[in-house]
Every structure is written in structure tokens, then in C-alpha cells.
Image (cartoon, rainbow, N blue to C red; front, side):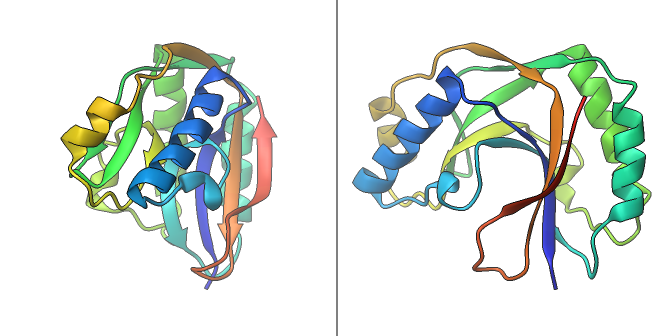
Length: 177
């Protein structure tokens, strides 16, 4: 069954350069998984879910809503981790982005074929640097230079999809607002 997720796809910038450099370094030195090996730089809005067919009606509702939205920004700053196994850069949405995210999530939640996990109730928006970390996280944090503090304009949402678990993620559709 196909898998999908929705995300803001990041345009090339100093933060995506940092992500690429550090993800490669961490993979080489700590045998972590580089998130860029399977998907381009992005901020996830809706985590991966299974669905028998593409979400055309739901996507159209999202797209129609986004037509009314102004550009907004996110701030990427610092380093953090989830359960010592995922290293990431925290992402802080501005008020307009928060409103957009809340409404998009509301539209998606109306589609009963889209499942939600409990960690998605209060999402922590982030830019992943490494997954499946087995080395001590404090050591990795000490050896990883802090990223530049960057404000990034948000003006797109992409739907990524793949047919099988082992496939890389591909853009299925997108909308710029």
C-alpha cells in the first residue's frame, strides 16, 4: 500500500547546507542514518501514513485553503534530540505559520483514511540531522557545531509518496502559496 507524508520542502540555504554537511559527517563517524538519503530537506507537517489511493479531495481542500494564505516564516535554531536516537534542529514557526499548520492539520484530520499517532497531537517541528543514533548523544552534541540561526520563508507544501517501505520518497504533488 502506498505511503505519503506532507511537508514544507526547504529551498537551498545555509541551513540546508548545514544539514547536508552534518548529516554526512554523522553518518560517516557514527554510522547514523542520513535523512537526506531518502528525502530532500523538509519540515514534516503530517508524518508518513498508508493510504490505498492518493488523497486528491483532501489535497484539493488543502490547496484551496493555501490560496488565501500569505507567506510566513520559520526560525531554525539550536540542536536537540528525541530519545537519544534522533538529532535535529528545532524549528519555530511564526504566528502565521502556526495558523497555517493548524488549519492544514484540521483539513487532514477530516480525512478518516489518514491515521495519526499520539506523538503528532503536539508536534515538535524540526529538521532532522541523523537517525538511529547508537553513540552517546552528549558526545555527539559536543562534537556537532551549532547551526546558524536562520529565518526561512515558507511558501510551499509538498506531498511525498512511495510505493514500498524500501523506496526513496518522491514528490507526488506540491502547491506554492
